[in-house]
Structure formats: C-alpha cells, structure tokens
Length: 161
Ligand SMILES: [Zn+2]
Figure 1: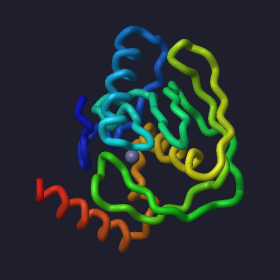
Figure 2: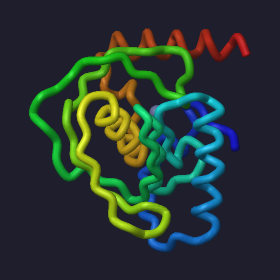
Figure 3: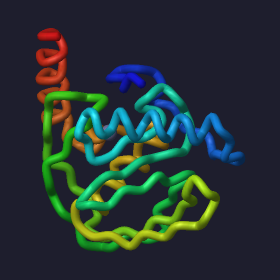
Figure 4: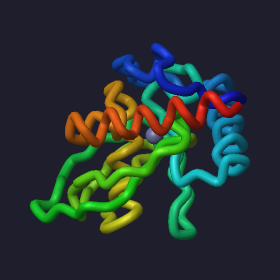
C-alpha cells in the first residue's frame, strides 16, 4: 500500500465516519500497519493511503493502536513545542505547538470503545493523526515563513527521487 504525498487531494478531504467494520476496513488497517512499519513511522491516517475514512494507526513508545472514528474529547491547557514531520510530506521537520495532554476516544477493530489519556509524544501523534481526518496537515500549524521553508525543503527532497 502506497502512502500518498502532498498535494494529493485526499490529504485535504474531510474524512467520513466508519459505520460498519467490514472486511474491507480490517484489510485496510492491516495494509496501513504494514506501510507504517515499513516506513518506521509513529502514526498513519487513512487519507494518507488515499482513503478518506476516519481511521488512524499510532505506533509510539511501545504502544500500538488502530482507532476508528477517533475524537479528542479533552485537551490540556499546557502546550509543547516540538519537531514534527509527516510521511506524506517527507523531508522537513518543523517545530509545532500542540497540547501536552489529550484524552482521545474511539473504537477498535472489534468495535470496542477505547479511551486513551496521553501526554507528550503519544499525545502529539494522536493530535497529528486526528488532524489528518479533517484535512489538516502539520504545515498548517506553522508560520507563513516556516511553512514555505518546509515546502521548499520537501520539493527539493522530492526532486531527488
Ligand atoms: Zn502526517
């Protein structure tokens, strides 16, 4: 399964809720997991493989979750500025301000409710992946200058391949 890169149109789509966990969804999650492990990423969202559906995978600090219809139900007031990158915008890493703590709710592939209270990097990854479901990319959180520098670096990187 290929990971699509900026400016692929799916990356800007508002993703659809998953109402039925059928074989297609399970297979998609499997293929996404494979792609994520192959790329050694921390997270992947369905729009990054060209599917505008509300499904994310996180693989961070020995945690692994497939989350369907994830939602941030609580966000702490404290923020943290840290470098972030994205498998759909390979190359640049820029500092992005995110909430330090989040509570996320979703369902797993068996349809069970999952609630995750996370801090630091796992919280950051969850916010980054859930952003993808709204068509938001990490570069959207940057200043105009930082964004154009990041995109310049990305295009340079892309031209090499
Ligand atoms: Zn991303």
